[in-house]
Image 1 (cartoon, rainbow, N blue to C red):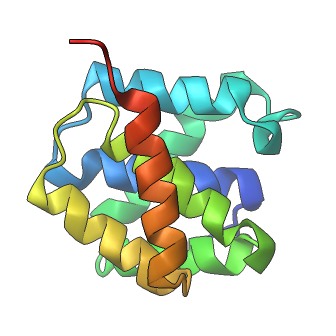
Image 2 (cartoon, rainbow, N blue to C red):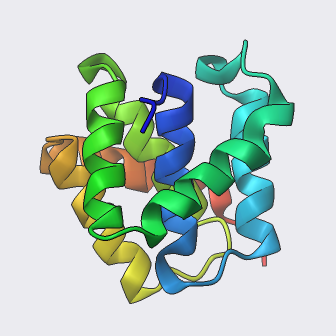
Length: 137
């Protein structure tokens, strides 16, 4: 397996989070696209590569021990200074449809553990994302 670059690994974490409940909604896919278009960490990423990268992640997930391999691969490809960014991207996808399912919570816990993030950092990321997603109604 060719090792993904940092941007691909960040996408892997978003895809894993979206696919946690075995259903990637249009809202979640749209959020992944928004993150890629608007976050500075993706500023030089060719957006046409999103679908092939997501499909590669899905193929990896289908393999034996796929989830563990994807998470381990992502950790190796993402520099420690971007671990909070990686968790933030995954959480952004999980809360985009305003319905955090148990499977998504479990995946986020695995991402947190693989990226060795402390509880305070995770809580701050989650609170900020929840604040961004609130509506008037």
